[in-house]
Length: 187
Image 1 (cartoon, rainbow, N blue to C red):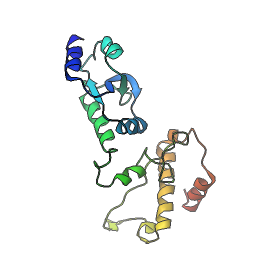
Image 2 (image 1 turned 90 degrees about the vertical axis):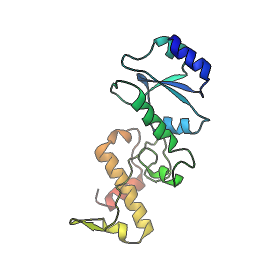
Image 3 (image 1 turned 30 degrees about the horizontal axis):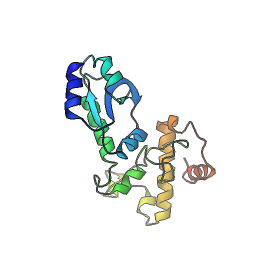
Image 4 (image 1 turned 180 degrees about the vertical axis):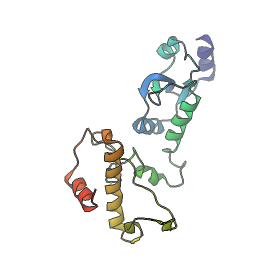
């Protein structure tokens, strides 16, 4: 533990100082938002068997895990944390508003990610051309009707979440508006 203690004490890194471990608190979009709202943070990456427990107990401010699996080292986990946090910092992405509609960032209203309400996956993305190898972009997306497009996106977000990650919505029942959206789009 002496090498890590000496390095941290000499460098005086930004706090919180977080240790990446398989046994840490699970890193998610909420934690990314929390870290992005602060003045900075620092990460310690273990290698192979990890680091001495005294580092976690007496040097670090917390431990985080990027998932239920074990890596040979914390470097890739650090990249995941850094990228997830950095893109939430104003000025990093070209359009900061776009982060509000992405998976794990928004509820089906496309605006807020209410932790009590649950989050939804982002709606499917389509680009040009409108038809490619016989596969067409959904008509609603090229209709020019912005309100219909928004309703379609909300419904698709709900559909994808219910199909692929129902656990994200288990904490909350669908609102009447969300049920109407699903029925409207035959989902």
